Image (tube, rainbow over all chains, first blue to last red; front, side, top):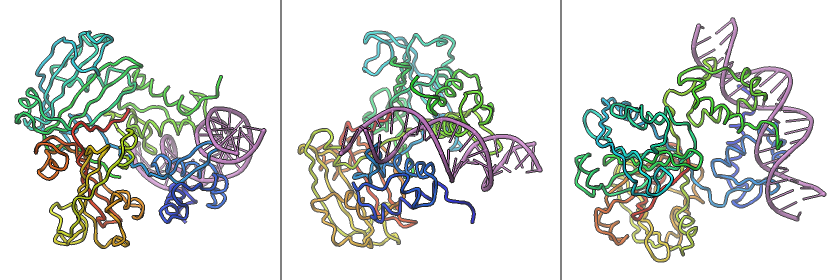
Length: 228
Length: 228
DNA sequence: CAGTGGTCTAGACCACAGA
DNA sequence: CTGTGGTCTAGACCACTGG
């Protein structure tokens, strides 16, 4: 024997039961203590196994309400969003970064930094490239009140990387969509206007304050992949 | 006081230290026992907090090698991919499903079910709609050897839901991309050909065998969103 | 080999929400 | 009120891997 029951073993046993329909969808399954006894492990181990299944969306758990097999298993997909430079360098290409625009302006969209709608923000547009081929266009708005912003050398270093290093982590939102390339983006990527682009929009908050908002438009053919 | 130190509290304290650069990127941080003492919690709690940070990609952990602040924090984004019917019904709209095509044919793409490249598969095309408005086009290939497939009433029930209920646990791969609407899809969605669409491609495996491969093309404006 | 993280156990208290 | 899951603790053993 390699070891006693690990929580992964227990989890797979439970998973098999669910897929074998020993417990039907929507049906309540025994509580942790009972299952722990049945599987011959401690309640802590049972708990860990069940929490893992719950985070996979396979079961629903509620205090006092017990644990039920999920009626509608929600698939959760985890994507890794690497820093662009690393994403490019991993393909073996030489990374390039070119700042195209740096200005102070009032953001057009609503999901932009600053307090008032009319407040001016730092606006950056840059191109990330691999082996000279444009890979993605970064269109970013930054709260001008950010401390240390004046020292930021956005010419040579991606704003993304500078912010990652200097802005404390808070919360944010990430949105993925397909958009037609606008005139500026199309030009920077060397594409016809209207070309379908995968766009990744990230809003970063520090508390309730929007610190930065960025839209990455990837060149055609770019994909996000994950295993299920 | 509400309670003692929870692992979430501990995790946030550690997170703050990292962002405050008390520990620089790449630097090793004290081991679990030392930290547990410092934060006044048990090693188990410390472990849970650190494991959580590791799964967020903020730190790297290795047995014997210790724990280090990640050089390149990888952002992980978790998206929930609900069943289309629920996605639509949650907006308050009336869900509609219409099967457009059902045939046996040899898949064109390589990521398709069956063994040989030339094997014939069940090919389905369907439209999911909300309040009569097309929401997404489902283009699916299914391994014809799937048990019970003959009984599947794909006319009224989405293949997605039938498969979820009848195909045992599977692994797979999910890819997101932006594609121009092809002629058929554009027609079904009532759009001009070439319109940028968010496409979600899922290949489902049972062991090493491809069971089904599906491409969902969402109507323009559809977004995937997650909090960070 | 030895230090570090990974996990298990047994017992305990707590928070939440269903009855 | 009461049952269920969520979590904490203290102690232990184990697995991996760097030195």
